[in-house]
Length: 176
Image (cartoon, rainbow, N blue to C red; front, top):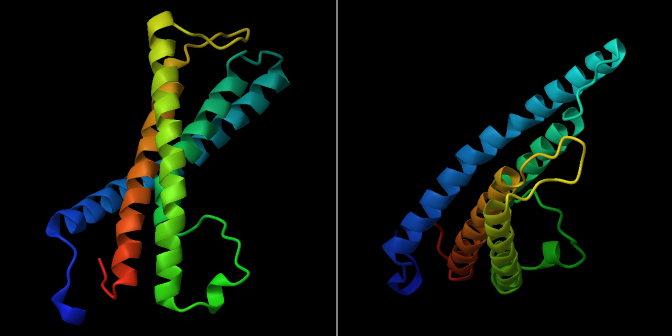
């Protein structure tokens, strides 16, 4: 991989980017299947309502499944560049200027995700320590969905860092 002036990002960064993107790709594809699980739960809800025996847990299971779907798929969505982007000027810029802008703005996302992760870890620890339950008739434990939340935020943070490295490489005229 020869580039201008022989500059190449360190091997550790390239390995990190490949590992994170591979992990998020696999997890994102698994998360896609959760849509079918949620549809099955909601279909079950329809059938049980027709019989007059709808379980009290069905709506919450659908909500938890949807939350797991979008939390675990966030890193994959970022990797595929599927997030919504406000594009007034961006498409007119050169690829290098786009990469520099992306590298700067993703630092704000990384900061946000670090803060979100710290809050998620604290909330999960609380849920485990005090046996926190949802305020509903079913009253499920909240630590499982909060653990999934922390995993999803961590995966997205790792992908944001990988994307930062890719943007740096693009700005330097390299590819990862």
